[in-house]
Image (cartoon, rainbow, N blue to C red; front, side, top):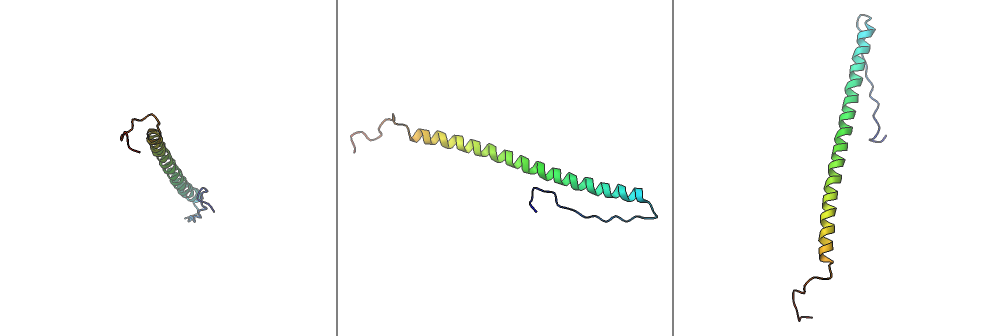
Length: 83
């Protein structure tokens, strides 16, 4: 099972005094907490990926600028007369 899929989480809820409604309410609360954790994890990963892409774009832009500077042909020769 991959990390992109929600894992199956088994929960056992005790039914006290035949109060099924209370047991279902507790089960739904566990379910909503689990869904909240999944959404929080997904948003964390999304923010992390967006920040990585921003940093990568800045780095690539800077490297392209540096490479273009080094590759220019019309620079003044710093050592005239030397071969």
